[in-house]
Image (tube, rainbow, N blue to C red; front, top):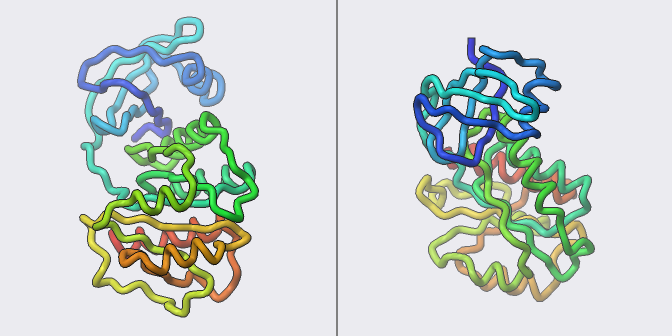
Length: 238
């Protein structure tokens, strides 16, 4: 039976290595999941794949483990990066969790003209990303970029990238499959709940690689739009 417990570990993983897990992971394994010596867990690190490991022993606030075999190879499936205007913490937590579960390459928070929230708790978000990856059976942790202002970030994107702009004003209900390629650098752009300013819309309108499309006839909250848009693009690209 495949172990249900998966742990992300930010260090080199290889066969027959003996490793030590820290206090936080030990608490989760021992107290929350109630595992014991000789129980098995899975480890991954966004680089070497996934490995089956055996718990050797618990020593105070540490867990000693041994890597036994490799269960999955290193294959990066997440190809879409999410550019989003910062929203309130409770909604942001939900956005991060669900988009990580669906599979996103990178989270890129921006400040737009109508952004009310202008900062995030990076450590909190990284913890949510880690836990969501462990839970959703993924091998890669999405990167969390530093906050940038809308115009600076948009103009810094690669010329050969495609930016799918979730636009409530767009009449285009479908994405042209001809522009969707697995090797394409792809971004999904989600705006603030107060919508983009006229200046920001003009910038997007003048970008040749920006593709506006409508997610729904209904008005969606930012976190809902991010989840729906990501799921739609990921399904079509994969």
